[in-house]
Length: 101
Figure 1 (cartoon, rainbow, N blue to C red):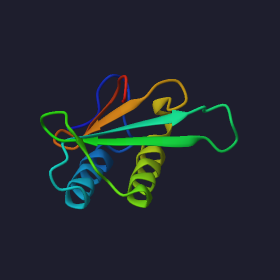
Figure 2 (figure 1 turned 120 degrees about the horizontal axis):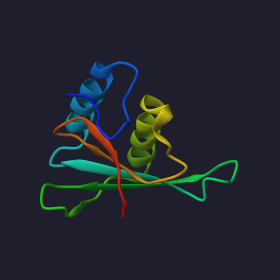
Figure 3 (figure 1 turned 30 degrees about the vertical axis):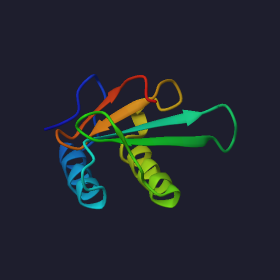
């Protein structure tokens, strides 16, 4: 599956591979929310939230969360990270804009 809502990677298999890798790193996680906090600064801070199928937050250590958030941003550079929060669904490999927590 590729990405919908006009947000796609140059190669659709990238999203599928990334979803598989993240599922292995984050057992029990259904989706991750990533947003840039104050994207106007030269070094914006990333906010990362992992949620399970019941939309309950799942704890992810800070270093792992930042690494995964950067992987997502680099995998989808055209996604408009500075304008809106994004959700990457690990089950469907779909990246979509949404109000991330």
